[in-house]
Image (cartoon, rainbow, N blue to C red; front, side, top):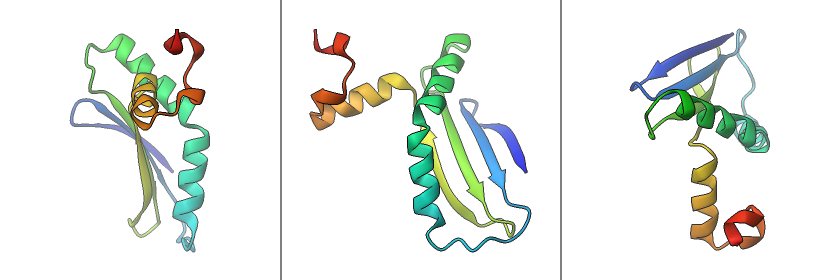
Length: 102
């Protein structure tokens, strides 16, 4: 099942709960990898929320919960600008949009 909720007034949470207990060995790595592959979608969602709501602290959290309520994994997304700041901090210029480098 999927539940969408708001926590702390600025965190939009998508909580995916499995109906049946899962074998979660190795699941965290796989799920986090898939979330990372789709990070542009979640970061875009953050930017859309920021354009509607005047709050720079908005984030999107995606959680996977096992049937017994155990957290399998979660990842928080802060929007596109956060990614750019992180890449600059890491010194990874090759992944920055060209207009940042001008």
